[in-house]
Image (cartoon, rainbow, N blue to C red; front, top):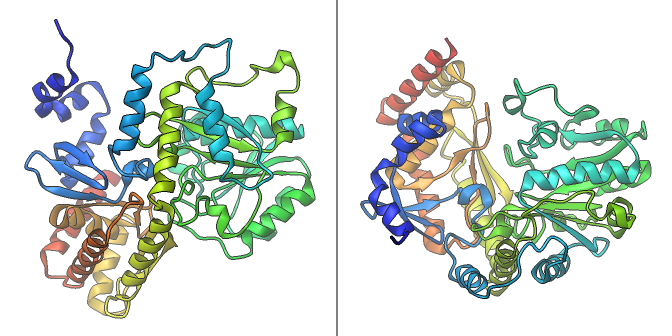
Length: 461
């Protein structure tokens, strides 16, 4: 009897949500059904999703940044198909692989010249775990410092560096000797580092939760302070890297040289999970300093041929299609176009970001009627106003977006780097119409707002 994924998919297509309710996270299904996101997608190409009625959706989440080159890119598919048919030796554990060497070489062409070694793993959170271990071993120091509101993953070590309490609650005790400082606060950082027991300062160049941008001198000063106090400077580029911000690495906006760069997400092409740590030779040679320590840290599947092939093909696509440049150009246009609306919409505070990492922030208005409506939502659940933006964007304009974090009035866009002028117009026009609707407190969008507030108050009880 033959085995066919296509047959399985078609046979059970209508059972997706039922299967998840019975065998997986049923709360996720409840969320999707409550807010009306329970669509059955049948196809995905580039930046577009297609449901069972062949409606086209513009995906501005890209799998939380995974699909930087878009979904189902033919170049990556071809590379993976070819890899499968070559009968290559794979995961020969008493050996080293060719493809991982080639991918390391290609990645290190893009990094600052002080980074000369690569370590591969399976995900972003594994890259963070590796950085914690490597920093402690290299410096012989215990402490790790991170930023408030930062996000570095959900495994236990990474969770210990997570600046959002909702992810940490109930999972303690966490990794000891981890402490936070405010993002963009150099005085607080210097105070933390001056004890000279900090192994590493791990920071996102642009914070993902809220898309918080640093001041122009922040990261250069971080580099200086880390050198001054003997702390390793670790740039978490898992979300910001590989073209996302209009430079290949976000650190390139500030011309800095960290001791490690953490990467994942976009490197996979959206097919096979892969993460990595680029580091100095000193760190690599300190951790793996003897033959009996050659396997002191690793991961069984980390350098598998499929992941390495996906990484090589993805880098090829990014360079060949000039997606970094496209990210910078289209992203800047979207940010400027939305900011141009601020004069006519009281709720709109600003659009900000770099490249294809964009935040649209909303604020309390000045006029009394709008102010009372805003206060009603905030009393029910802080940040609820943004659901009044993202839900109509999805239901009425077929745009998939997200609230940037818990308790904040920020909508976040993290689209593929392949957006066209048509997509740009789709985004700007849809935001214009949706924000305009929120300024009519007797309109249907505020019926949605009242329902959201009612659900939020019930959940509090």
